[in-house]
Each structure stands twice: as structure tokens, then as C-alpha cells.
Length: 292
Picture (spheres, rainbow, N blue to C red):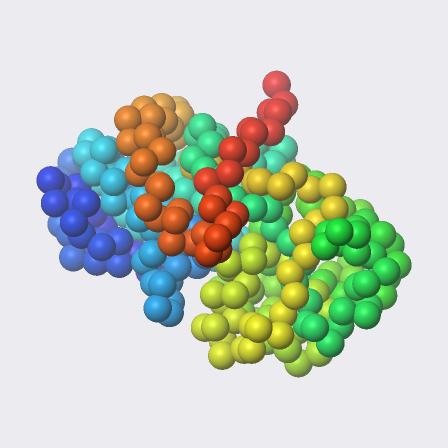
């Protein structure tokens, strides 16, 4: 677990996200802990695009807009982040997907951006196994799981969006390999490369980036969207469901509104496929309905 501390200054926009550890701690300010993990195209920890994720580039601007806090950045895996968000301390995660279970213990911001939903990645050699369940380049995950002919790799405590989560919840345990490690996706891709898993779930830019990091031939992978899942997945900032967490979210929402969409536009453009503007980011995702 890596911890960095940051007190914003007028130079905040000029300091790369990866250099936050050089900043000084704020004396007497309330501490706000940010939970980060490697999740391209939102955050990138390794490789040539390190620090160039959309949220990577938003965070210095957002932190500079919240000078009343002492900002501490902690790198954790998904499972640990979920635990920390349920603690009494003021903790926020800037890369969260909303789901009903999380909403019972986590408070959410307004949507920050839209991202193409998670999908299924397979090796080209496994295409015949998936073909019966594919329609218009989208895989029927429910039928695929019911057929019990493939094994999928998933990251522990991760939400893949409500539609996908619902399908996974009704699958048999032996069809899923749930990884709890710090580099869960990288390990799952290695298992897939070795033939121990047929499919892995994730964002397509995330899969490509992680495959490069692992030295795997990502050009031999095929990506399928999930039939029935919304095209775009809203991404939120989630904070501890405490009075301090709600106050922080109120300030975060005001800061996001002040920064406006231009704060993300350049970062998003770096992740768009050539000739396909808005293909992977900047989608107008509708927030899911929240239980009362």
C-alpha cells in the first residue's frame, strides 16, 4: 500500500499526479484519503501511459479546488478500497461504479463521466466456444454462464455494472475464478494466456494496457460487449457514508461543476480510437435510479 500526501497550491495544475508525494502536508486541515488503483483508462500506474488516465489528470485540478483538506493518496486493490470506504475516516474513491449494494454504505457524487461498459475478453483461439452466444458482436452472458462451458475470471469486490453483476450473482461458483490479489487483472490475464480461463471481464482499454504490462500478445485478444448491458457506464466519486463524507461530496460536486466538462476533454481525447470520437469516453451515461 503506497501513501502520498498533498497540500494544494497555485502550482497544482503543473505538478504531475505521479509527483504528489513531493508535496507537503497541510497543518491542521481535515484529512481526506483518496483510494487509487490501476484502472485504465481512468488511472494508469505503469507503462508509457503512466499518469495519463482521465481521472489521473482530473485529480490535481480537483485537489487544487479543495484546499481546505489535507489530501492523502493511497494505492489499494478493489477489495481493500471497499473496506476502507466503510470505515469512519474520511475516504473517497474517484473511480467507482454505482450499484445497490454499495449504495447502502457509500455516498456518491454526481456522475463524473461516462465510459463504455465492461465486456468479455477471450483469446482468438477460444472464439468457437463463444460463437454460439454472440449476436452483433455482443455476448449473451446469461446464456454463456448457463451453458457452463467456460470459466470466467473476475476481480474480487469489483462491480462490473448492475446488469453484469446480476448475471454473475446467479452463476455457479465453479464457473468463476475470483482473484483477490493486488494485481488481480494481470494475474487473470496470465491465467487466460496459459489456458486456465476462457474469459476475463473488464474495460477494453484496461485489458489492453494490462496485457502490455504483462508482456502478453494483446493483439490476439477479442473483446465483446455484454448483451443487454447499457452502452455507457457512469463513473462516480464515492465517499464514506458519514457526515464528513457527505460534506466532502457537496464540495466535490461544486468543484466538478466549476471545472466543467473541459477539465476532462483533453484527457478523454487521448483514449479515443482514431476516427471514432467519443468511442470509449465522454459518453452521456444516465445515472442509475437509486433506492430510497
